[in-house]
Length: 249
Image (cartoon, rainbow, N blue to C red; front, side, top):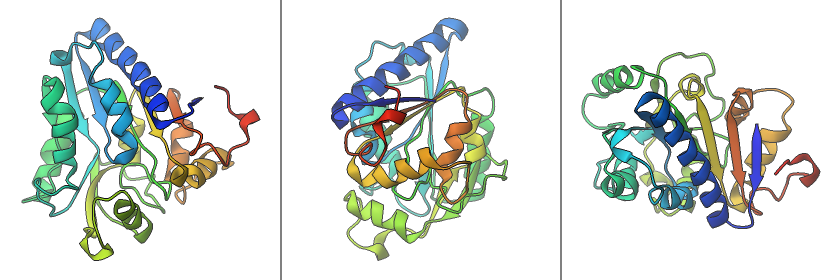
């Protein structure tokens, strides 16, 4: 585990994007292609803004994404497909982009996406941490045992409040009750995981993640500490509840 603490979200994002770009270039150099996972939400703004400006052979990159609300149209402001198309795909034009589709035949959508995802290992996964400690939409208590690539999950109230706080929805009733989420198991199969976690709203989740003695489904992000190549990027806000002597920058 490596931890970087920047002064601002912008500094955090630039550093995370630099590391991600190096890993993507390395994969392309070694294998002629790279496969990446991108997460969404306000916490990823600065990282993606920096990443899309990196000198990378994007025509050799295949993108997958983590999760999407069930039943939410792609035209909705909160759609993660919309988010990634506008903030990544339409800018860098990767070789391929595979989205989580929460409309139509959910079971068939998941089956097709999982088949594509599991053709080869993911080289770089950008995985945020939610205010309730979730990774993807695996809210606590998360299922650490399920081996599927994607599952349908119920969103808890803390997760819904975060979506409102970030401005994606106006009321709790507007937030969908269910989402399609990449599983914790599948996330952990990635070769490299990079977590950009800015903002004081994430401080308690960061504290719980880093101070827990062992992995626990009650703080899903604790599982990331078991990964052999995980890097966590914080700013002063998200690191505010951590004893600084325990952070190796």
